[in-house]
Length: 96
Image 1 (cartoon, helix red, strand yellow):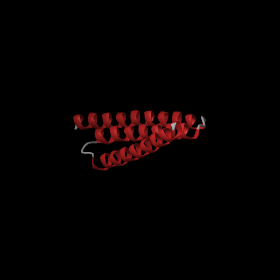
Image 2 (cartoon, helix red, strand yellow; image 1 turned 45 degrees about the vertical axis):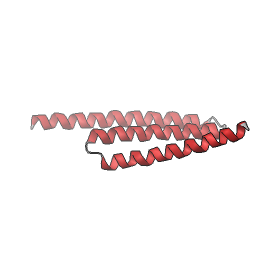
Image 3 (cartoon, helix red, strand yellow; image 1 turned 120 degrees about the horizontal axis):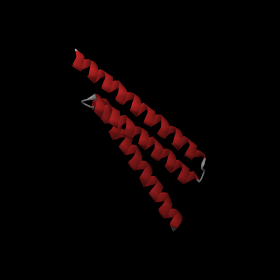
Image 4 (cartoon, helix red, strand yellow; image 1 turned 180 degrees about the horizontal axis):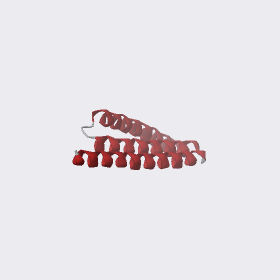
């Protein structure tokens, strides 16, 4: 009984994570501003962390935890880099 509930919860979580990924990808493509795209990219990274964590839970292997940490670190650095890029672009627009 518990195994069945656990399996159903895993499958529902997979579906919701992939549905969220699709919606976030749409926001990345259609985002009206660069800030919206950066936030959507950060959210996509967080969803990747969720998928890797779900894989760790489903498989019972803790090897995916290293993947989770790597994805989270790369996502954080990418967000900081894009924020700096946008800030430099806004500063240059004010100077012109």
